[in-house]
Image (cartoon, rainbow, N blue to C red; front, top):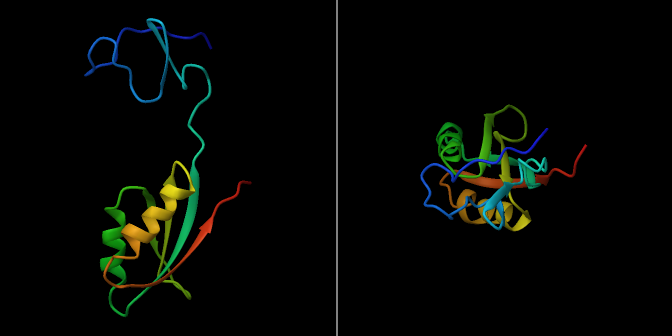
Length: 117
């Protein structure tokens, strides 16, 4: 696929590239244009146990948090399974410890980091 060279990005001033751009003189090459695709990140499954009667409230709060890509209420030993995505383990860890553990109704969590196929 040939590279498309386009003028500056909408909503940006001349010479101000987006964050995923690799500057090279006056031509901007994005990772997508180079065929690199998405930046590899960290994905984790979060198993959440909630207080009695709080499952729907916790699920609603988790859905509103940045970095959480999916939230499902389930049956079994855990009440909720959520998927967290971040650029690295530190980001995922901060989401769990700073955002999720402080949600009222969360009793316990287990974080399972995805390691690939």
